[in-house]
Amino acid sequence: MEISIHDFYEKVKKEDFDHWVDVRSAEEFAAVRADSGLVKLHPLDQIDTLDLPKDAVIYLSCRSGMRSGQAQAFLMQQGYTNVTNVAGGIMAWEAAGYPVTQG
Image (cartoon, rainbow, N blue to C red; front, side, top):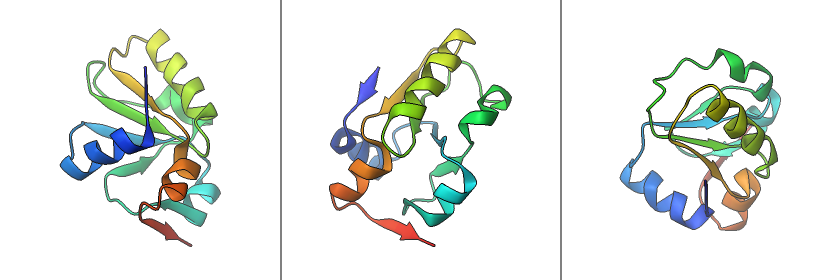
């Protein structure tokens, strides 16, 4: 499943999910990230250590949506049942004019 950046932003405003996981590297996350205390970093190369309830509502993001798509496929193979990829990632978030934190 995938969600548009605009629909996801509406969910962020309402805090309408359990977890938002950014799978970029720590360096990428530090450089620019959504200006929201809801997003948590968990890099793709460590996705196998994600320890969340298998039925939690999880949204995954990255730079463009590619790595978060990979993370989504992996988590679903591991038995997670409600994982959604945020289309376009932080690039779409910025392009839409949603608030970011840099540096």
